[in-house]
Each structure stands twice: as structure tokens, then as C-alpha cells.
Amino acid sequence: MSSKRQGYKFRSDYICRVRYRNTLPPVPYAPKMLTIPSLVERHVPYQSTSLVEQTPYSLIMDQSASIPFDKALVDYLDAMESHPEEVSEPMEGVAEEDKILMSEPTDGQGASGLYTRKPNVTWLRRSEYIAQETRGISNRKEGVENKFAMSAAAAKKRNYSTREEQIAGVENTFKPLPEDLRHPQTKSRAKKIIPLLPDTECWENIYTIGQFSTEPADEARMAKRRAVESSPGFNPSKRPRFSETDATDRGILRPMVNPHDPDDTYLVWFLPDAESTKRLVKQKEDPLEGLSEDVLQYHAVHDYEYKNDASNSKHLLLSVHIDDHGERVVYCPIRSKMVVRKKRAQVMLYSIDQLDSCFLQSAQFSYLDDYEKPNVLTVTYTKG
Image 1: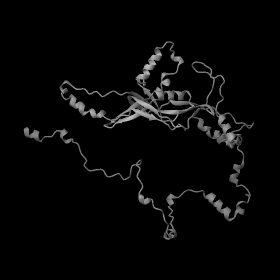
Image 2: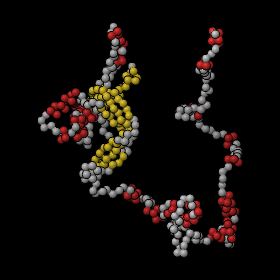
Image 3: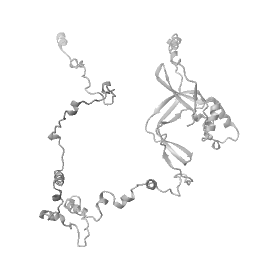
Image 4: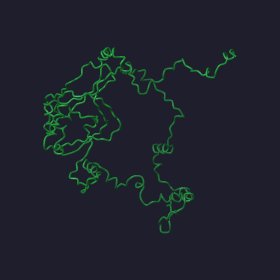
């Protein structure tokens, strides 16, 4: 029994992995999206020789690679070149088999010359009347241009040859402004209508919606806000937002990468100092005055972790412009969205058995946060 069991093999013993040790041949063609630099030998000025100029190139024609052509047209052109007077002579008569083509079609008409009513039959019996309907369609009163394109009169109306006609044609495409335009929900009447056009100057810029998980203002700004809110007679509906008065909306996010850990990427949030805040708030109150070319200083406030959402966004960035051309509103697409959260310090947990080696491991990983981080940014606006 033992010898039989030793010689007997289970079915699973014959099922084993097969490893192909032969390597695949190289790819015969380079990848399609790979940019291969051109050879230096290609950049050589071409010089023709007398041998090349005197050598005729034989044109080999293959019957299978021929192209179709209209033989009747070729014969007509040859006849016009050889003896045009014979070709241009009028025909003596029409052949008997072609005379039927000269007669006007009368099928499908009644005694008064009008078309008879189409028979109302089911689609199973409709094949009996297809030929009759087809003959009736080609005998309509209007011209062929109404069937395939526009008439000559309509084409003349749509021919914008001058610049004034082009401007008038574009203006006619817009619907007239309704006088009783109201809001769909509040039913308020519109007081002014401003044209909304795409911003051609800033269309290529990439705009992102930034959403903070907490208030991005620093502690000094938050203390001033709490003092204003606690003052008597405070009404938030009659004053601008706090972010406009303390320049929190003019902050700067700067990306940072940990040099010891390339996967550790985050954003540093900078806010302007007191002097720069006054200048930025004044510039927002009077945009036409502009900013001077003095340096603005920004100080680091918080570190944020971010998460990008590059899905197709339907949000638009609207900006109002008041200049020599009047008041207008332009829009740009917002292509992405970013959610930022405060970055927390990395906390290392140890068990009770590892208390002796806690200080050794903390010293071992302390270099991860030992690198220089920017604390101050200087920004200068130049007048365009």
C-alpha cells in the first residue's frame, strides 16, 4: 500500500505554473506619443547636382490604382479643341426615344391642374402609391433653390458685405429686451440690463474655488472682529464683510513640498500686515487709483492640507468693469475646486513596551520637520 501511495500522484500535482523565460521581441515601432529627437545629420543644406537634374524620373502607372473619369466630358473637351465649330452647331432634331423627355409631366393632376388628395392607407399598402407621390413632388411650383438652399432675394438680404451690415446682422440675432422683465422668485422688476460677454483677456487663466474648513483669518483679526461685534449698534447687514475690511480676501496660498518626504505637500496661507492691509483696502475702495509700486509684506499664518476636485465645474467668475466703453460684465470659467483643511502636527504613538526607545525614535524622525519654511512674502504690483 505504501508503494502504491508513493507512486500515485494527485491531480493537483500536475497543475503547476508555467513560466515563460523567453523575452518578448522589441517593439517594431516607437510609441505614438513619444517625441523622438531628430538626427543632426538631417539638418544639412540640400545641394542639387547635374546628374540629379538630368536623370528623368519614370512614372509607373498601375492599372489597379487608376482613378475614374468622365469619358464623355473628355471627348467633348477634345472636340472643342480640335473642331469647335462642329460641336457648337445646333442639333437638327431630337431622337424619337428622347422626345418624351421634352413633354411636361401631367401625371397626378386633376382636371383643374391641382394635385389630388393623397390616399389615406396603411403602411402595408403604401407601396402601391410610392411612384405616384414621387412624381408629384418634382412638379412643385416653387424653384429648386427653395428646396435645397435659399432664394436669390433671401441671399441678398443675408449678404453682409460692409462692416455696418455685419454689425446690424449680429445685433438682429439678439432678442429685444423685454420691458416687464421680473425676477422669477421675488417678482422684482429689473432696473438695469448690463451686457454679459466672455472675458477674452483672462480666458486662459486658471481659476479655482477655494473652500476653507475654518475661518482663514489669524488671531489678531479675529480679536478685532469680536470687538466690533460686541459694540452697541452693530448691524451686519449695514456694513461690509469682515474679510473686505481686514484684507483676509487678499491672502496668498503658496504650495510647499517637504524635501525629506516628496509625498508631503501642503499649502502655506499668508496674510498682509497692518500697513499692507490699509493699502489693499484703500485700493479696493478706489480701484481707479491703483496701488503704488511699494512692497507689500505678507506673513505666514497657517499650514493647510488640500484636496483638488478637477471635475467639470459649471461655475463662472463674473467681474464688473466701468471704463470708457461703459459698464459691462465679463465672465470666465472656473475649472476646478479645492478644499483646504488645517494641517495637524504628526503625532507618533508608542506602546508601553516601547517607552524606553521613545526618545530614540523621536530623535530619529525629527529631521522630517527640520527644514526652512518661508515666513514672509514680499509682493509688488506694477502699473500696466
